[in-house]
Structures are given as structure tokens and as C-alpha cells.
Amino acid sequence: MFLKKWEDVPENIKNIYTENAYKKLSNKKISLFFKRFFDILFSLILLIILSPIILIISVLIKIDSTGPVFYRQERITTYGKKFKIYKFRTMIQDADKKGSLVTTKADDRITKIGKKIRKYRIDEIPQLINVLFGDMSFVGVRPEVQKYVDMYTDEMKVTLLMPAGITSTASIEFKDEDKVIEEETRKGLTIDEAYLQKVLPQKMKKNLEYIDNFTLFGDLKICLNTIISVIK
Image 1 (tube, rainbow, N blue to C red):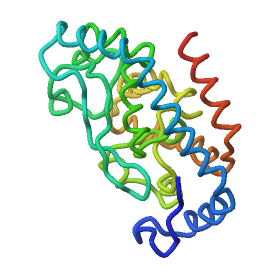
Image 2: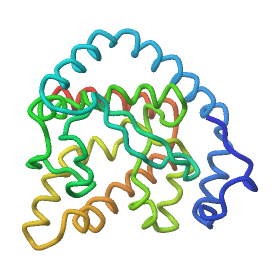
Image 3: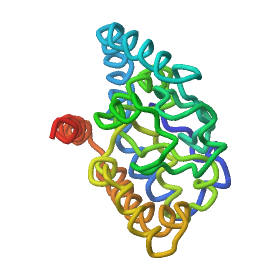
Image 4: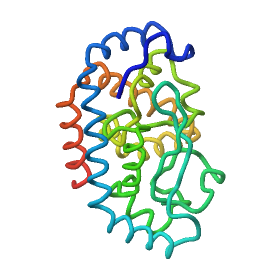
């Protein structure tokens, strides 16, 4: 990953918070370079190793329900750039047109095979393609849809200085965020309101801490914690 020159950063992202974070990240250029190097190397290796599993899951998805194997949705990454995220499709076709952009565990749009592969985050394996192409990193803030990014505070925009990630401390600690959302919806909030008011602000605190304290060793630790979290 290479930082743009500050003058080339989009104006809608620039503010006192992003400027201070940019200055701190600019002192970690070597670490950012190796972060990208490892992303390319290990995403390529894992795609080769996991190719048989990818093939098997693809067949199971096609047998289980009508629709494409992969779910592709527009998300936001570094500097507000739009990209198409790859995931195994775990919901019925056109599910995002038939309900909220936030999914809960009891969502009736989830397919039978989808419930199983979501449990162990297997649906995120295809994101290795996004990592290889540079739209994502192994570790980083989970990419949001434009609708939610448009609601970011100035401080939250700091997260747009680095690539979106497959996993993060926030992802680990909020792996059961659907339970929080379900509790809040029972209190009268909509799913979107519960996510924006109760979940996103808490996740962003962790995301901002990650960027402020970014190190390669820290990324490795988050990857290991993710594996442990999935196995539990």
C-alpha cells in the first residue's frame, strides 16, 4: 500500500482528524509497503491452496438455490474508492433488494448452505481476490456500502486512509453483532437504525484505534485472533 500525496487525497475526506492520521501513517511507509507485499503473496498462495474447497462450495451453492455462486456488492475502500466485493452467496438471489443491507442471524433470506458457511466465515474466502487486486487487505476496517459511508463523521473518515480488510479487531469483537441488532429492533428501532446508532459507533472506536496503532506485528496478531475466534 502506498499513501497518496496529501494534496491528492479527495477533498471530501480531508479534515483535522484525517490530516493527523495521515501524518502518522506517513512515518510507517515501510510497514505499509510490506503490508501490501504480504497481502499479494499470501492471497495468491491461499487462493491456490483453497481452490478445491472453493470448487466444492461453489457446487453446493448452485445445488442449494437459484442464483450465482458469488455475491458481488459495491463497497467503499481507500480514499472513498468504490469496488465490488466478492463473497460466496449465502442469501437468496437479489436479497439486498428485498430487505435491509444489514443481515441478522434469523434473516429468512439466508439459504440453507448459507447458514453453514456464514457460521465459520467461509463465505469470505473469495475476498482473497479483492486482496490480490489491492481493493482490500487481510487486516483492515470492514468495507461499508456508500449509504453508511455517507453518514461517517469527520473522525470516522480516518478509516478511509487505509484499505478495507477481511478482518479486524472490531470484526472479532462484534462477530455476534446480529444479536445486538435483534435486541435493539425488539425495542422499536429498525435494523438500519440499530446498526447506525448502536453497532457502528462502537466498531469505529476499535477501527480508529487500529489505524492509530498500526504495525505489521499487530496485523499478524489480529489474523491469529481471527482464526481462534472462528474455531471457538
